[in-house]
Length: 208
Image 1: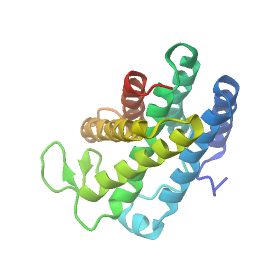
Image 2: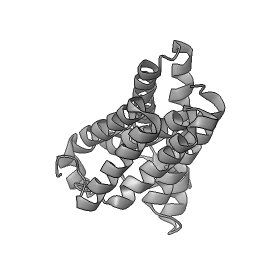
Image 3: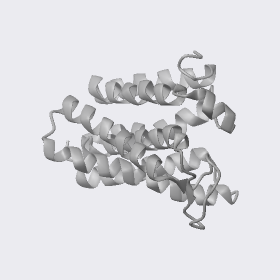
Image 4: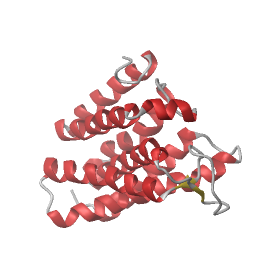
């Protein structure tokens, strides 16, 4: 369980989520979420000593984290018979983009800039971004775009829209982080914003 970075409640929630995804939308939907989980563990563990020194390393995550990342993709697959799988792919691209940005962006040599003040901020501050962090957000979304394209046999022309949609979702998370720093909302609500933006844009622009 510690390898998965989930406590017992979170592990149960993740298993239930996986079973529901598979039951509703099949193996491809489950595999895409597993890519998010495995890649998320990797980027979280990557250079964890530096993150510990910064005071931002999270070794275990709870059920709230699983729910905030998984509820929107789950709703998207529940609605997929009507709206298609684009919303699901967009939501996962968003949360993967955010995961890469938050876990790898803090390793930037440069200080992030607050979106609220446009001034340098402490690493790990919600609502702050760096050039390196934005690049990592793009890479996270690109990873989901590549996997989704393979799983669903999408034309190469869909890769860029999926990547941009995921990146936009993660940027929305950063904007929500401005309110989070002011005591309005939490990391979980910011994650929800990210997933919702990704899902809506995916529904509009990704045709699966």
